[in-house]
Image 1: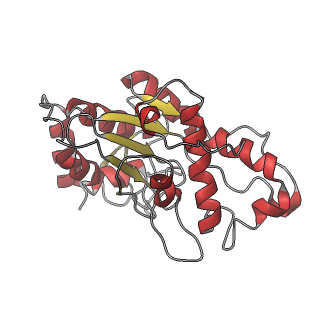
Image 2 (image 1 turned 120 degrees about the vertical axis):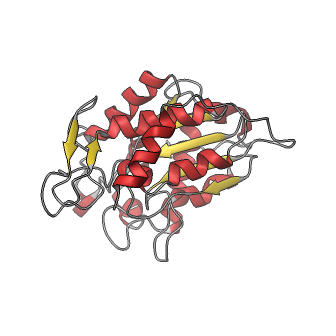
Length: 260
């Protein structure tokens, strides 16, 4: 079922994209990600829903719960954004929570990327589709969107609650997809924000009691208040050039959040 969609996506990636004309008004920000960024149901929500409070641009949140870089590609969601962007629009992409595992088994969930960071290819044990690496999907999307004149920012996944059971685990090594996203940004020449570390810094400052209150359902999905804080941590990282200057910096509202 995934084969025709993926084939179309890969074919499109080899064509020379023509940059579109700028919008007559200000740029638009598009968001691509999973449930930690998406609009979800109470009692939790994604940080993308609060970004517009801290920037002066309109935000279109295309993030969808349960998606990975692979499934977002196969469902044509990157293509949908590509067809909507205009020159100088900004696209923020953040995946990682649903990208682990192996696609080789008969129970392949359609989200797991092929292990590796380059040109490795796997075969889905369920559908027979060719499955590529997390970096491949991110870099393919970044190049296609950049080819349309969009300014792309790859963000690392957010952290899970590092204060689980009142014990701090935030000094542990981050998930591998954090570094993978950093490398994908470097390989494609687009911006990068280490959202994982910016949230870790904010959570350390806030402490166990406050942070545990941000996780009413599980250790991954934040309450609306927590999602707002996660958005502020992202904006502060942009303002401080935490990982170099990215396109969004020129559109931050004052005062800029100071949460870490």
